Amino acid sequence: MSGVFITNHVLAGALIGDALPPVPAVAVGFVSHLVMDNLPHYGGGGAPLHLPTARKDGLLGLLAIAGCTFAATPERRLPVLAGILGACLPDTDKLGEHFVGRSPWPPAFDRFHKRIQREQLNRFPIEVGAALTMSVLVVRLLPR
Ligand SMILES: [Zn+2]
Figure 1 (cartoon, rainbow, N blue to C red):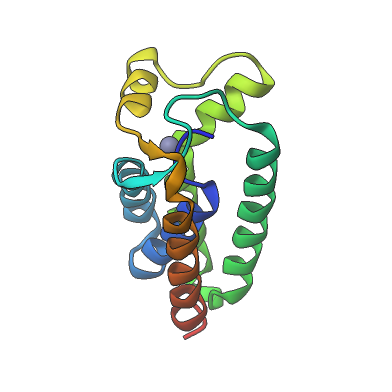
Figure 2: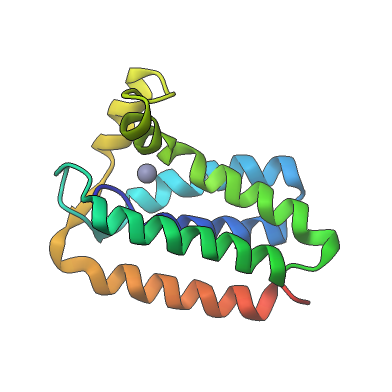
């Protein structure tokens, strides 16, 4: 695994989108991704993507997108999805590398994205705690 779980990026993006108009939500979501990747998190420190974990995380992330879309009020739905888009964009490198053999990003950005990771295998509780905390915030904030 490499990088913060996409589920946590989805939840952070939803919270950002709930607070901003759509275009700033994309930009702040994008920056939030890089900030979160630079916080201590679970991962194999540059080890190849662990597909079973990535599949579960991807499925959870899709469920989180659906849940946030459902939870947001109709007028906040677009900015919430914009925040999620921005917060998930940097990890399209993993999708690109897996499905078409290359990242959509310039090599310099990919090197930067890999260099900022602060991963250790004993930090799984941090990922889960962040996911639970942000899930509570999403459930409390998005429907209002
Ligand atoms: Zn990342």
